[in-house]
Figure (cartoon, helix red, strand yellow):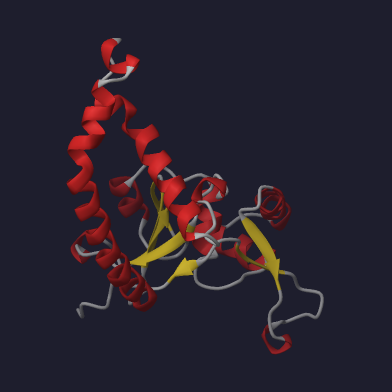
Length: 211
């Protein structure tokens, strides 16, 4: 077995199965039964699909699958997309894909390397001013009322992040992201012995990058 033979799954708060990849025993070991929305996004992570293709993958009737697709469209979770005419079996077919980016492993390596360097600079600046931040907190009414620095940290973190974005300019505020997440991030499962991959080798793991 090669190191590339890894199963694909989706982390959407909890781990879920991608249709036709892992065995039912694997799913029970990994996580609670996924919701239809979770399974739908997982199935569209690699390529656009039609309602008929999704229904076949899930073993559902097309009317049932269509209702799930309509709900996901309404919530902005997925979107209708155009595909090449040569890929269609019928001219009137409609294809759907995830409405947020899927960051593939090569791109993830590049982007996270750049982010890592920037994070080091931010960590250095934060450590340099950490004492001043704590000192400012100790002077507040909140500290005298019994609140701790950790209690206030989410507010402080949000305030610093917002002001950084204001200084940079032209950067989308992550707080405006849809509730279903920012992007899908491709990852590889390390412990391949836990999965049944006899039918599908070389599949990536997908996890959601949340705000």
